[in-house]
Image (cartoon, rainbow, N blue to C red):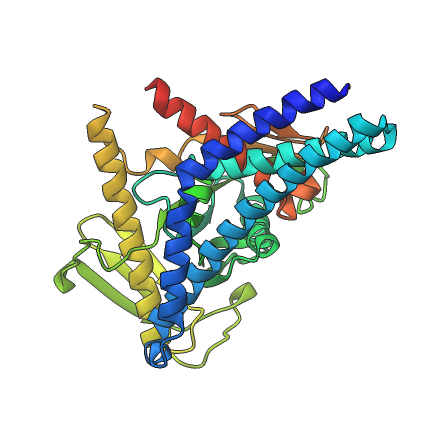
Length: 370
C-alpha cells in the first residue's frame, strides 16, 4: 500500500476514535476517576468491605478504560508522525512499520468500539452465569464442564475476578450444572450474548464403539442485583432445603448440612449453592442468584411486552446459537452472526472475544432493525 492509502486509513481511525471518545465521555471518566480516588483514600473505607471492594473494582475499571483510550490516542498520533517521516525520507522500512501499526490500531479501535454498543439498562452490571447440561447424557455433562472452564479461562485472560457459587457433578463425568459470577463492570452486557443453547458434535470419549455424539448445554446470563433494584421476595414464597455438599462421583466433601437449595414457589425457579463453607454463606449466595434470575425474568417480560411478543422467560436461552464441531471436521460457528473459526481448542481455552464482539454487533444491528 502507498503512503496515501495509510494516510486515509489513519484519518478514518482518527474519526472513529473521536466518536468513541465522545460516546464514552472521556472528560466524565476523568472526573469519575478523581472522585473514586478520593473515596478510595478515605481512612474508614475498609470498615465496609463490600463497599470497599465495589469502589476499588470500579476505580480499576474506570482507570483501565481511560488508560486504554489515552494509549490508543497516543499510538495514533505517533503513527501520523511516523508516516510523515517515512514520506519525507522516502524510507520503505518506516512505511512498512506504519502498515503494521495501522493493522494493530484498526483491531484495537474495533474492540473499543464494541464497548460503546453496551448501552442497555443492565449492561454495566456484573454477571451471574448458569450452565446446565442438556440432552446427550454423559457427553452433555462433560460438555457443560468444558463450557465452565471456557468461560472461567476467558475471564482469567482478561483479569476479571470470578467466584463459583455452585457445581453439581454428574455421576459418571462432568457437571449437571454450575453457577458462577464474573465480578467486573459490563460483564453482563458483554456476556449476555452468550445466552442460549450450545451444541457439541464429536466422537464420544465415553462410547466404547467410538461413535459420533451430539450433545447440548444451556447457558444463561443474568445481571447482578444492586441495591437500587426492587426485587422483593417474601419469605413465604421461598422454600429452603439444606443438604450435605457433595463432590465428583457423589463423594461427600462436607460433614455438615451446609448446602442450600432455594425454591421460588410462584415461578418454580430452583437455585442451589454448596461451594461456601457455611450454610449462611451458601444461603446468601443462593439468594443473590435467585434475585438475579428474577431480575432477568423481569427484564425479559418487559422486553417482550415492548416488542408485542408473547412472554416466555426461558425462550431466549432455549434457542440454539452456537455449534462446536470436533468431528468430522474442526469448526466453531455462531448460528446468529455466522462468525466462525477452525480452531475449537483455542475457543475452549477462552479465546472468545471474536464471538462475543460479533454477537454484540449483531444484537445492536437487530435492535436497530426492530
